[in-house]
Amino acid sequence: MLAWLLLVVLTAFAAFAALGVALRGRPEGRAETLILWTAILYALVCAPVLALGYINQLYPALLAISSFVLSAGAFVVSARGRSLHAHALEIRDAALAIGRLPQEALRLALRERSFVTLGLACALLVIPITAWLTYLAPSESWDGFFYHEPSVGYAIQNHGFRLVNLPSHMVVQGINSYPHLCHAFALWFVIFTDKTFIEIGNTLAAPGLMLATYVIAKRYCRDPVPLFGWSSAVLLVPAMLTQTRTSMIDVQVTFFILAAVHYATRPVLRLRDAVAATLCMVLIAGSKSSALSILPPLVVVTYGRVLLGHGRTRLGPALGLTACGGAVIAGTAALTFLRNWVVYHNPMWPIAYTIPSLHVDWPGLVTLADITYDKPLSELIKVKYHHPTGGIGDIIARDYGYGVPWVVVPLAAASLLVAVITAARRRLTGDPDARTENALLVGALGVAFIMGSPSLNIARFNAHIVAIAMIGVAWLGGSLRRGKRFHEGAVMGTLLLTMIPMFWTDWFFGLDFKGIAALLRLPARERATMNAQSFQMPRTTAQARERDLGPGDLVVYTQEMAFPGVLWNHTMSNRVEYLEFRSAATFLAEVDRLHPRWVVVGGASPGRAALETRSAEWQFVGTALQQDKLVAFRRVRN
View 1 (cartoon, one colour):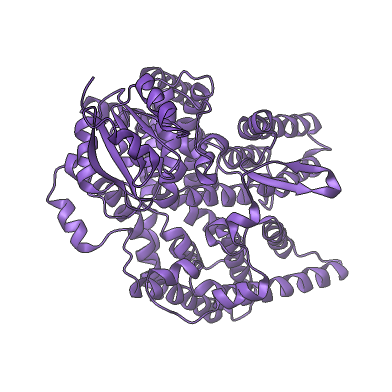
View 2 (view 1 turned 90 degrees about the vertical axis):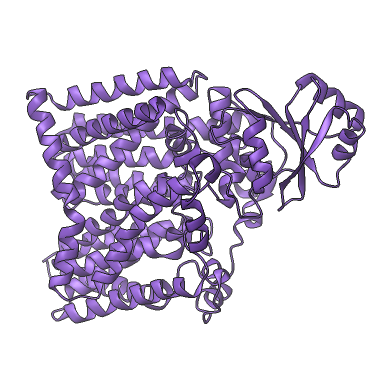
């Protein structure tokens, strides 16, 4: 109980301090305040985790002290020029005002008798429902057990993000080679307590994702109601919706990108806006390898506009911000990419790159084409515009949903053409259209993101592009003389075609109603082992794991295991190590040296045969993973 109290207090204090800092940035309106607040909260939570993690001093007590000191410092500094009491009251009032946003938006949509009301209500319900289900149900995520949750487990076990010995599975290698900022955020909710909230990150980023879409679109359309619809549609796109209640990170990364786009393209770019854009770009650099293609256009737009807009009047601050911002972004990226270069001679490890014209020949385990399954445009169109087939496979194949390809894409393309013509005509007449040119700047970033996308076939990589396309349609709706009906129809069609497919699948945030009812009848300890997926540890084996493995107990696994995330207990207090099987003699000798409590091997592997030659010492526990036919053994003699 004290551990949970510590987590709640430290998180609440970080949120309180983050809002104080956000208010000193003078955001325009409550929506922008929440965006900046969320970004700063990520920074305050993740900074001490990453700082301690990369010097291998990540201990719970030291992290708690560091977080408290950082939050206290942020609060005191943000109160500069006023009393701490007055600043605290301002923070309280701002939080209460932000809390009223959902009901005010719903009330406004209802008053307009808009279909947007249904979409907005569904999107808003996603947030508390997924938070509750994250608490109620055990974690379950395919990629999560590959490398997201193991990244957290190894960091807690090793007190930092040091390199660990891993099998040569491409996805498992991501534990060593992928950026860790979002893992640091997940770790924050685990290290003091247990895995209950390891999947909470996407849910906490969802409001920011919606409002980042809203505030950009609001520049081009005065009517807020259809903009509520677009911001809801972004979250309801299957690729985003199905990531809530998982430890995958694309909802969070999409929020960071859209927040950076918002600040980088503000019609009047203040230096403080460029600072906010820099913060968001740092979050991107620390979160995902695709930052290498996402950041360059954002950096050019942000600092190019800083130098052009402030170079004559405030050259020193403009140059200083550009230099310092670029250095912080590069330094954050170097934590991952420079280390990969030093260790693997490939900044993008484990993905191999060969570019003969640039004399680039980086070694790796797979190529980008091997893992992203990108398709030629004709085949991509055939898949995404295919008729509905039903079942969960439908929203996997058509992960953009049906509203994006059938409504948003054609209207966004038309919007881009109209915007180019409008801007060019106004320029030729000597009367520039600042509103349209700003929309084109946002659109240009969207085009750059399309060109740099690792795969247009995988919607979760491109949700920021989808949001920018929706913003383009909002510009068109706000530009037409009688655009209200058009805009309402576009939003309604998108929402309908996005939401309806969810009704013909069996998916409900990874659960079903019978499963939820069963979970409600169980205490927390038993809920943690209520696993149902083939890539989870079966329930009986998971219960044995919780009984057998205590703090510091070691689990050894061999190269047949591709989902090491299942090997930690619920409190993530045991240790996990990889041991490659080469021969029975060397394997058993290493097992004797490591003295593990559990060993997990392939069900028909020579490792199992070797353990069974010592039946007096090793007892069969059960199936460890149905997906890869793995089995677990426990040591019965010390």
